[in-house]
Each structure stands twice: as C-alpha cells, then as structure tokens.
Image 1 (cartoon, rainbow, N blue to C red):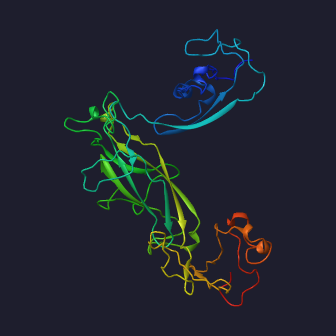
Image 2: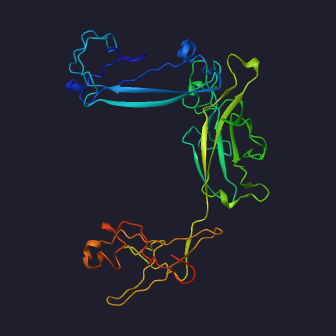
Image 3: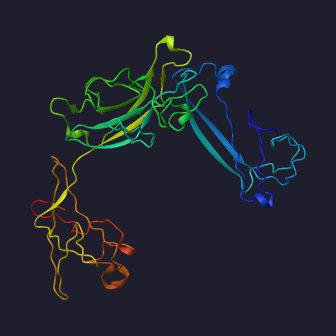
Length: 375
C-alpha cells in the first residue's frame, strides 16, 4: 500500500545487530514553503509576528525484511520494495510532536530580544540564562507581581548570536554582549496594551522601555483587585490567571534591511491566588523539644511523653486566619503498621488506618462535638 499524504518512510536500521537500540532520525520540517504554496492552507496568516502551530506524528513500524534494495540515498523508502505486515503489528509505536512557529523578520543583522532569568541592577553583568520563572504563587492580601527581564543580544550579518559567540560582539566585548536597540515589553495575546499602573521599569519606576536590556515589574490587576488598598478580595483565592508577554526591539524604517522591528517568542506566566494556611494553636503541644539522633532540634515536631498502660489524651486545635474559612483536622501516620494490632484493626483505635498506615481518613469521632471547634 501507499503511504499517507505527505508522509515519507525512512529506515533506522534497528534490526541490524549493531543498531539494535535503534538510530536517531532527525526530521527537518520546513513549514514556511507550505504556507505559501499549499492551496489548502492559504488562509493561514503568516509573516512578521504571526503565530502558527504544527503537529507531526512519527511511526515506527517493524518490517519483516531489512534489505531495502531499492532505497534512495538517505534511506528513503521506495514504495513496494518491502514486505511488511498488512496491519499494525506488535512492536509498532508512534510519537506525536507539537511545535509552534513565530515568524519574525528581524533583518539581516539583528535578532528579537529574549526574556532572561536575571538582571544586574548595577549594570556590570549580562545574563544569558533563559530558565525564566513562569509560575507565581500570590497571597490575596498583597499585590501579585513578577519581575520581567529582557536582553537584546547582538547578531551580525553572518547570523552569529551575541549571547554565545564573541565574534558577533563589537570590538573589545565578549559574549554575552548587548545591542544598543530600544526595547520594551508588550502583551502577547488578547490585549492591545499594558496599563501604566500594571508595568513599570524596575530601576526608574517609569515607562517600561530600555536600551539593550530591560527589567520591569508587572503587577497583576483584575476586577478582584483593590488598587487603592493594594489587596485582593478574598473570593479570589483558588483562582488562576494567565498573562502572556513579548519583548520587542523597535527600529525606524531607515534601519532596514539590516535591522527591523521584531517581537520575541511569547512567554506566558501563571498566577495562582492563594489564601493563608491554617496553623496549630494552643492547647496543641507545640514545644520545640524533639531532637534527632544527632541531638539537633527537629522543626515543627513535638515529643509528648506517654506511659504504657495509661491513657493519653491530646487536645489539638487549629485556626485559619482567613475570614469564614473552615479548618479540618486529620491524621497521617505512615509509621503505623495495622497488621501488628489484629485485635484492634477492624474496630477501635486503629480502624481508621489502612495497610501501611498511609491514609488521611479522619480519626476523630464522626458524631457532633459539643461546642466549637468541630472536627
């Protein structure tokens, strides 16, 4: 049978005893010509600042023979020269890859800015660390912010990247080296601009604009946020907000063709709104008296003396500072082996514990407790 439309078959020689673990196939997929020549997808927007997504499925189907007598150069299969099972066979696998393309013509000696992990307020160090924060946990009682750092690295006409290659840098400089372009931060999707109260330059507290590098503080503002009091309404607890940003270097038309205005790959930040956790309070035993084998105090652990044959009653109390939030007490004791106590396993003190003791079921009585708090 023939292969599916636009699919090509390659052989990784994994039946060869020298390549039993399989070979690595690099699939070079050039999506740009298809966007301009394929009549089926002429309506897809493409060009400067356009975002597209692509899906590729790679199949590994075992063949009965491996001679490949009619293979073209590069291992490309010729239809009909192989014997293969007619149906999906044992050992066949598939992998689906999803990737995105963000087209941007930055010019012949320029590249878009990039978000980086750090920013030196003194201006002596340039960061080329791209492991940036994309998740922020915020307490509802205070503003929710993130510091966005951007570096615009040099690039020469040979395509050498000033973030890594000193050959792209001006004389006397070494990588990573910055351009002298004017850069700023913009919203990526769904918004036309960022308000002046939402984003400000970190150093000057002014407009989020810089030269070569930039650090700005973004403050999340939604309908639940009280701008005057700098706090959130309590009903925001548990909500998640996502904001996406791009960095842009701006050039006049006269700078073309070497430099053109271009936007970076977008980054999206998840803001998770949280409340205050409950805390144990007196009369719960809270003394810092528990030590490990080396005699060091163990944080958040309290030892309570007990005598064999005598009952031990503990009063445990907890409070949550958030208004009208309920508090629940439960037990987790992975060290309890219920099998050691068969007489009390079915009912009694250990009835709440499953095998191994790893369980969070309530160990308190299910009946109502007179007076607050209730467990």
